[in-house]
Length: 146
Image (tube, rainbow, N blue to C red; front, side, top):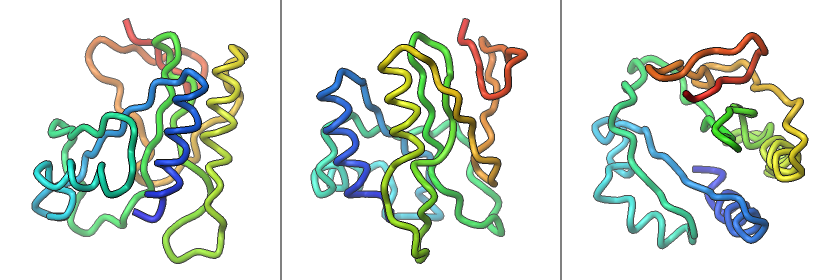
């Protein structure tokens, strides 16, 4: 993943500031054998992740013809989704620098207990599915967990 070292650094920085960080791997082991659950401990150690790196086997895999999607990064302070979107504008092979500015802005706002005014970027793979036990609020980009 092109964000690997930046995500590890982000985790260390924001854990030190009191944010709980968890990474979820929802990739299909059939489609991406390097992302199989058996490979995850080695990836965690190699990348230097200081946060739990878990496998989400409940997420259905994308269609074989679907383009690769950037990781979806939700932020859930106080059990309310305040941000669901990208790390930053960088993409593999692009000239955009990897800064984490979008997720950092949301985390900084949440840590300051201001909430986040940022909204998710509408791209394939960034849709949040409202699960049983959740309800969509009237305010876009927010989901309250009951």
